[in-house]
Amino acid sequence: MSIVTEERKLPQLRVLPLSGGQSPALYCYVVMVHGEWVPVNHSFAEWLVGDVAMTSKEASRGRRTH
Image 1 (cartoon, helix red, strand yellow):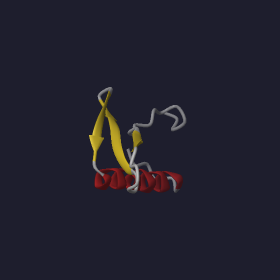
Image 2 (cartoon, one colour):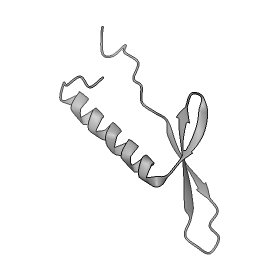
Image 3 (cartoon, one colour):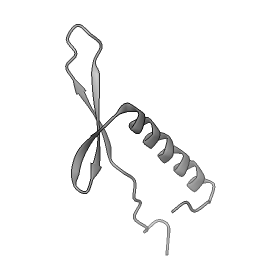
Image 4 (cartoon, one colour):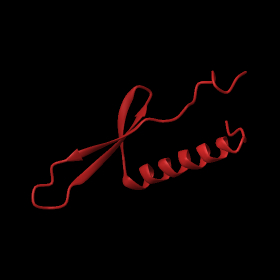
């Protein structure tokens, strides 16, 4: 199977800005799970971005990660 035609299973992550008024803006992170947006915390979002970056780096080196 060609890696070009293989469907990648990367999760969708969004950052939704919330109005902060005078205070610094807060952010709400959501991730798509089984067709629904589920709120997650900053630590999870940070881990997810790092994991995807590491997986992409390994894939660019020719290693198959999935």
